[in-house]
Image 1 (cartoon, rainbow over the protein chains, first blue to last red):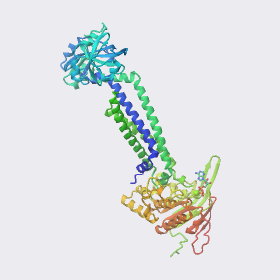
Image 2: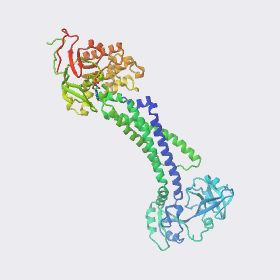
Image 3: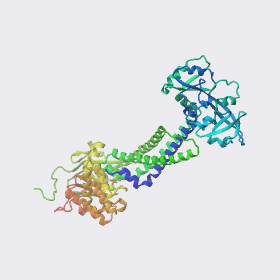
Image 4: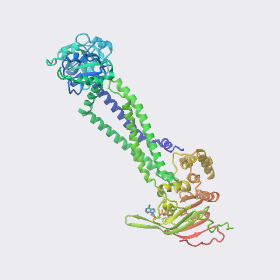
Length: 376
Length: 250
Ligand SMILES: Nc1ncnc2c1ncn2[C@@H]1O[C@H](COP(=O)(O)OP(=O)(O)O)[C@@H](O)[C@H]1O
Ligand SMILES: [Mg+2]
């Protein structure tokens, strides 16, 4: 079989270049956008995904980790009575006002008071063991490397949160927050920093189960009791979902992302289809000749679609290569970018869909390949 | 025994048109291009349709080859009535039985001469080996054996038209249609093209219908139909012993 589509693509590559660039840039934009969204909004559930708790207990109606209210401390013993539960620990969230040694003014910080013991659940996956151990000292805090400038502080220096002195004993990475700065400390330190007299108990209780796969069932089972004031339970997975969804949809960020994705798709498809249409028009007499010789319209359409496919594949290849480079660059600059397999697949699907739509549009101009027009 | 001139058809004609009419309407204007035209062509002959520009030659060719529908009348090609075939069936008919050569060469810039010829064969259900054998043979027949690997940009106009002829010829069609195949070429190249077409009619028994307003081609044809205003004015056989008119059909 003579590979007409491929040979034309190679021989007339200049003609197809705009389409490949359009597809490539559309792919790259979608890729980076998805990676950024996953990175930024993924950080809103870092508290959950970075910890090894299977079940979360908090105030009913809580929509994101940062908007929790205190619950009764006695819930802890109730939860511990469930035979499926292996360990329970409190988690205290305090909104704080940071004043660093450098002239930075007040910085809004999210204080996470966690159990600093070696087998603590909170941030077990995000916080190295030695840093966690150091939190046991009174008034010790750990902050993310990326926010040092913002906080105007360096390792070993002191600052104040809500007027109470704290000391930076460790610098971590991967603890960026959205809309503020994460500061990690021990439960005791957090209680001292909390200047709201109404806050009596912990913001959350987090529990590890003997069998993590039971999270849904145990969460449902623990939910029923009302003897200890208002509280509810979520499996860690559900709570992470709720939290990300809150940021994506209730803040309008998600709509913006979808809107941009739509625009990129549209612009990419317009440029690509115009290029492919021009390529078909450029060869319309040759196509018409083939049709005169009896080569079916279906076979000609296949040639156009195959060209669209190659344009998509080559554009994707370029986008992929450039995307990896840019993501590595972003990582090195502590820009939160994350790419997982479903997101990458979604990107590939989107780009190939774009190429397919453009190919279909170009296929329509094959109608002009009427062999009767060759006879004049 | 019939005479070698085969002045009378030996069997059913390869192409038969009966009372064919065709008009084009553009806006208010209606142009009657063909008006009740009848015509019968024999297998193995090179027939030339000559006439002034705009007299309906190309339209007649398009109708006889099944590329255009008639308004009224009938066309029989190799025993099939073309008017009864749908678009698919017409494509299949053309695939199996017809070859075309156009004024423009219409070659794909990206393909070598060999690939231009091989491409349509791929769609005929031939094996790869058979397709290549035929492509090779056809290119040799038009004298391009040594230019097979070249792309159109590396070929002269005459060579390009010979590739186009080889592309049609390799299908081994019973009917070969050529519309002004020489008008983009100089005299020498035009001469060569018409010689090749003539040879094809002789060697393969192909019915070749060639349309041209070029009077120089007349001497090469077995039969010349002179057309004017959508009608055939005369029907001559330049090389027939008596060389007289056989009357005007229709
Ligand atoms: N598709 C069409 N639409 C309108 N008019 C046409 C069309 N095709 C041909 N014609 C007209 O029909 C006449 C005959 O055309 P054509 O068969 O191409 O002539 P020739 O090939 O003899 O020069 C011309 O006047 C031309 O303008
Ligand atoms: Mg014409």
